[in-house]
Length: 376
Ligand code: PLP
Image 1 (spheres, rainbow, N blue to C red):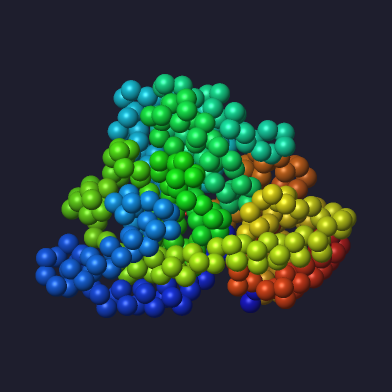
Image 2: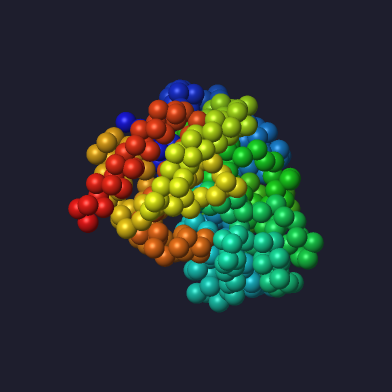
């Protein structure tokens, strides 16, 4: 099997697996006052320390959630509940993941004014395109760091800094799901007040995520109850998966640059081999995150190519996994030509992929392009 769908989810690493299993043994409730509870609480504290260290933030600013979708929903609805009486405008982009786009749409239905900024003709979002809408009424700016469909890297740091210069009180949120542990960054340099993270995109299991909220920013909780996670996210903590998330971060953090270079070389190998071939178009430019490569074989439906590759034991996505075969609005927003929209597949890498994986993919993709064109 050749797995090239790492933007959808990743294989759980040994370290995370072992930490999860160990976590099941640590079965006490972290809120219990007895020894078993204290041990479980210690596991969570340690994990929080790992996450805080990797983000360059205080431990009390990190909260564990069930997934990035929950993290982003918490920020968007929680900011609206905390500040929405006075400020009614939300600014975002047209290329956000549904976990951000949908809660914002719900707030729009409830009367918030939403400005969705499209990339320019060059497929890029500029800080000015966002800041021209910022005013004293702006509640929230939510901009992702790396787009999950093409790997496009947004100038999120420049955007947040520019927003803060105009309106320091505006909450700046960043979906860092496709950048955390892939690009080297610290929250301070990024300048976001809140960021969303997901475990299963970085070799931890599904069902665990994290949320950073800068001290002093008020985000009312989505889940209320026993007051766990300092009241920010009630519900008994998932000790096992939280521990696994921290183990994956511990494993990946020292090698962010090394893995980036490995993956960048794999992307180059893939694009060099396909460049110039008639009917093949690489949607992801050289300035995109190398972890995501969006490619189209003209006139061959994404799903047809996906299943052809699958028949060769190669796993990719059509556009993005979340769009489940639906035509991607994000790709057209990113100025991918109409003729490629239905034919785009997403190859997403991790550092465990090899040159042989890439060569097998290229060979199968070309074979697919040639044989499927005949039977269309
Ligand atoms: N944001 C981005 C950019 C993603 O790629 C994904 C998952 O595909 C998510 C958010 C949602 O993450 P989760 O599955 O942890 O809710």
